[in-house]
Amino acid sequence: MSNYNISTIDRIGDITRGIHVKTGTIANTTALASGAYDIFTVYGRIRIIGLDIEAVTAFEADATLVKWRFTSTTPVVGVSDISAVSLSIASIPIGARVMWRGTAANTAPDVSATQASIAVVTDYMDVGHTSGVGTITATSSIAAQSGGSCRFNIYYLAISEGAYVVALV
Image (cartoon, rainbow, N blue to C red):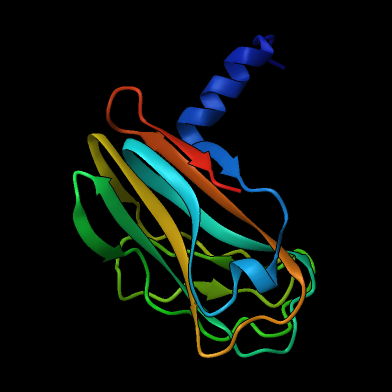
């Protein structure tokens, strides 16, 4: 058993599994309605290690599809897809997740049917610009979620000096 200080253990965790930022609990009628919903602001350049939507309460049976996008506001650059559109997130239970899978913008997020299923991220993705600012957005389509609630999670490493992520909710 090691005798590392708790702050040392925390820092090692930040380096190996990424810094974790999560939103508060959000009603699906807000976050997963049709259209774009801003979830995180990125300051500087980061490497995304993980990104997911966690069901806090069960989702409704609406055939909602979701994908993630990044928009750089400083400097102004167009919208970039971070993933393809997921399969339907209808009726996922409490604790289930919609998980980002890695760098390929044409790879759909994995929709888990239970709390125990875990998608493996196949690679990482760098977003943002040194000294820049941008937003990670969840974009929903086909059908808006009519009930339930969720939380968004991001795990990242800072690439540029002083880079960080802030939850917008």
